Image (cartoon, rainbow, N blue to C red; front, side):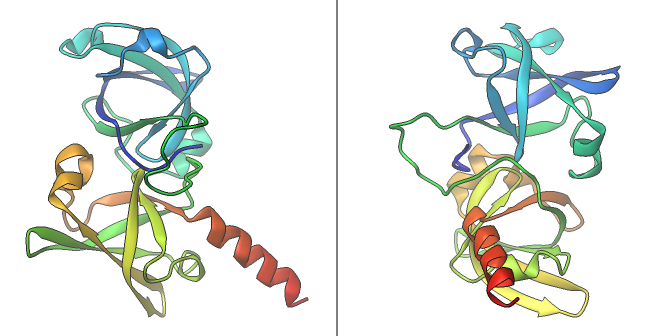
Amino acid sequence: MFTGIITDVGTIDRVEQRGDLRVIVATGYDMAGVDLGASIACSGVCLTVVDKGAGGGTGGGASGWFAADVSGETLSRTAAGQWTAGAKLNLERALKLGEELGGHIVTGHVDGIGEIVSVTAEGGSHRVVIAAGPDIAPFVAPKGSITLDGVSLTVNSVEDEPERVLIGVNLIPHTAAVTTLGSLHAGSPINIEIDVLARYLKRMEHYRGR
């Protein structure tokens, strides 16, 4: 379980094909405090630490590194280009009981892949519009929560179109600076996780209507 509050931006140092794809991620985390088998959300995808060490992998410059295996199913359901050497990942360690829940409840399971339609300056912030498939539409609402590449954000606007839904969010300077979202541009693919509460409400609605 996560909150969508990013605590580090890691870099994929290298990838290895060994059945599943193994990614080695350089991170600022002190890996001495991270157990093997622990969960780390990587740009919205919950992965399991299968190996770890000090230093920043072969690239150097980071406090530590961890390895995680990415299955074929995960590859097929996440943003293209995310699992390549040099790619930046928004990282978040699993929530511990008693910690502050600063974002919203995030599971680390990607529900769909969106595409950035536009990024425009709006005051000191940026307004980002994302296009998603119509299957995402029932689960988003203005002032609700959404997770984009692992980052908890508030939905500002929702516009339904015949073949897609347009979701507008506001990206403040702090969020742009401490996550990968500051480098978004039109055409960028992005991982989307809907609010878990919306998922259960939709399920309840389905059974209520039977």
